[in-house]
Image (cartoon, rainbow, N blue to C red; front, side, top):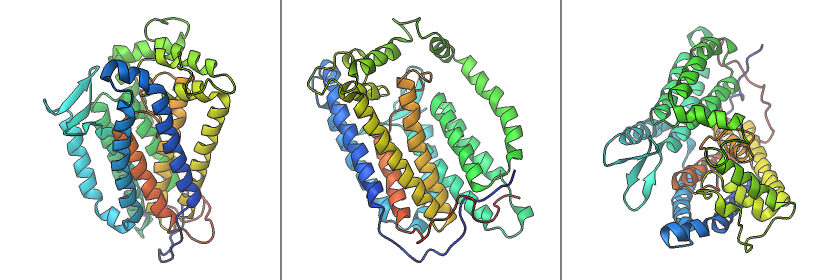
Length: 390
């Protein structure tokens, strides 16, 4: 099989206007997310916090921080972002280590994925790890491509870097996020032009290790068994999934509307988090789901188009990685809510309540907007360019 690089090298002198269509899709997805959170979280927020707008206010506050990050990454020169990569990587690793510090790290259900931030509640470092991993790999791929002698190019530093970041997330007992990041990282290797041969030993070691991690945690085994037997454990492991399916079916073609009470949604535990898509489906029905999917696909199309048109390899691979992170994560979440995949704990981008998630989603969008201004006048092809790894 031939191996290709993602883009051809070009000088970065010419700049264009930002991709307006992409910006519009970002605004639409964010707006629909806030609207859905408002529609589905009120009942639970009143019962637990005594304020129907509790989750909406928190999401708006996090969105404001994310907007600041979006503007920063949208207007900061990409060369400057690369120069900050060491600081970003080191800071992210330190934040991950803080999850294990008593009094700072927060443990929920046996997992240490959060740290306490004054005036901000909690922060989930794994969201930062996803962003930094893509930047880290794109930087290494670009450096390797600039080495003139093909024999001096090596895929090993990139492989070790990806394994390091994945293990950091696994250490927090966040298996789903770690495995998801691994998949995105492997996709980046192929886009960058790495040979398939390196995947063989990686798979031989990685698959047994992944299976061992699943088997070592009884709740993961039980979750998988529950997925294989959807008609059982309806009052236990499958209750959330069963309630979500009922809510989706109740939405019908046109949906129940926002003011109907959304009785089925209110029966889903913490619906404002990973199962918020069920709330959107019950509110807006099949038409609403179709509209969401169209907007999401346009978002991905414009972002991938930006990646293909980027004149430098680092920006192209980064945009591809960020787009894949958000697009694939959204599809996986919808599949989980619909019962197609076992529960993963992966949130729905722009929708699920979670300050860290919305912040870094907006930051990634900021970088994509930045890259859209440096595109060439003609689109390049995915198979254009010289080999990265011989």
